[in-house]
Length: 221
Ligand SMILES: O=C(O)c1ccccc1NCC(=O)[C@H](O)[C@H](O)COP(=O)(O)O
Image (cartoon, rainbow, N blue to C red; front, side, top):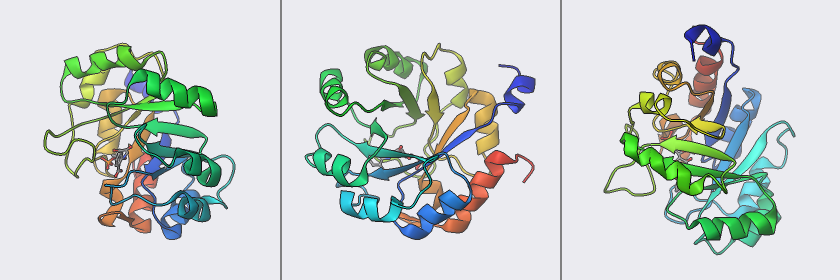
């Protein structure tokens, strides 16, 4: 995509791993498009479905709620019942059939995370293309399989080298300084950020959320 065209595409922003009302309010105030809560017991961002419901119940309808979970999680019924996500995001090496069962049962669209460090990692898109409605691309480190640490990035330009058959988010240590460069070299229209907006593990800083969203919306900010 030429830079000229890219400049006119309105970016969509997802803030992931919200754990308190202040962070949700900062995301809402700054007109985020998607928010995600994490339901993964080893994550510092893990919260209960009931608490996720309580911090997100007042958000406007235009913001879509995403649940980050795994097919191995046992509390999916509670996640659906209380948090009421509009999209489910699967983040590990789930089997296609297991995701399909959940998709058919709850009738919700699926984001499949694809972890990328080299071009051949992108082949896994083929495996999930039947069941995924969107992808989320991020990097991985061998010693930390499912939870990225700040600073984990991949060569974003790899995403321009393959045909991607669904809408997709770019993720992985995006911050207010690198996000517009990352969008340019990857062609991303949809952006996900989490750890880079935290003052301590699991705790998002409302000012960092605001600065991040402003810098995506206005690259000269
Ligand atoms: O965020 C978590 O703690 C997490 C734990 C287990 C599975 C997935 C998890 N996050 C889901 C994501 O979409 C991304 O990993 C995360 O937002 C990465 O973004 P960033 O921290 O900005 O690199």
